[in-house]
Image (cartoon, rainbow, N blue to C red):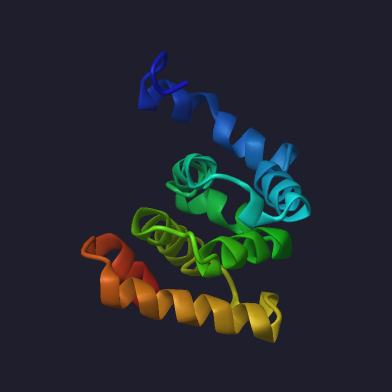
Length: 139
């Protein structure tokens, strides 16, 4: 889509909101990958999914639709996988910072809250992008 349409056209079509709200694509993706076991997929596949999810999380109003236990479980499995590379960890921490800054932490179970806080600390330590550092602190 990005290669064919401009950002303004994509935003005006509200296709991202349709994907998140009507189709629950973030939850669908997370549940699909958790069922497959995150460690059985290539890092390239994970990076592609993170790129897609980060693009969806770009708009603040979409982030609350991305809160899904299966998504956080998937992100946790990816992040803690021994084969997880630095780029993927960075993408995961950026996604967590974006989504966590827009949600009520009480909507997550305690283990997921612990995971999110751990990732937010990782973002503060290893990320140089000011936006994600700010969102990590906000979350």
